[in-house]
Length: 292
Figure 1 (spheres, rainbow, N blue to C red):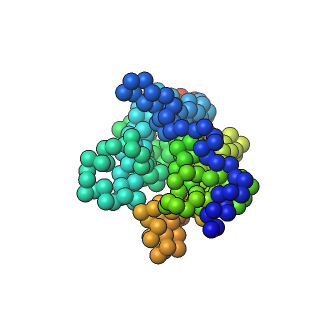
Figure 2 (figure 1 turned 180 degrees about the vertical axis):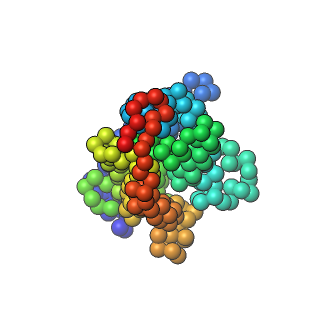
Figure 3 (figure 1 turned 90 degrees about the vertical axis):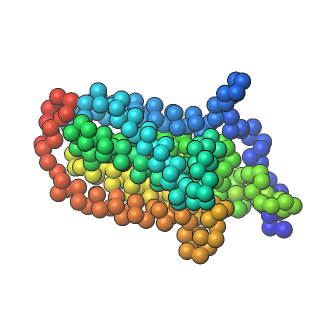
């Protein structure tokens, strides 16, 4: 009866918002908001990266940007998908063809981080660049993708939060078994869009443009790891665990996403604390003046 009460408490029904996972369809081609979120995040992040590289002391030239975007995009897709399979759906290993069905959804941000990092390291070795400083610059661009990705999760009506009676709670469809009525829930996708996207971008923007953080290798990417880790860890308390990992969350006391954030926070804190020891005179790759 708690569900029936929550569902009739005057909260907004998700179906009344008129949202749909598809942007449009033409014949056999369908553009989904989730795909558009990835494309927008990469393109806007690329544009912002070029603005960062135009500043003194950049770790690479603008001409490296195209190559880097290729490596990063490959890392996002491969790492995100493989991470999802390993962390959230290992049963897919028994059906390998399902792993290739990216259009069915299922991407892990933590896996995407690992994949992108490996891509950046390979890119840096190929061009003889400082891999950690490139991470600093790329980290400043990631919140764009996080913001659009979480908005796409909301439009898709997925990854919703726990039942709640807060005034802004939303009744998402098909969240409980019939015949129970769907309860109003925290719109946790929007919480994450605000914290992981807007707030984290603001913190990194201030650190890059208003402090000397970019001259301390590892400090910016450390801020990103700590900021994202804390934001995700906090929001998970308001979010339903993945259905296939509900037993895991009950047994361990934390969601899988929270456990994956622990090493991120620890690693980020280390990078921030040790960044002063890596401070050095920065010679610009793109031919601009060095920075003491």
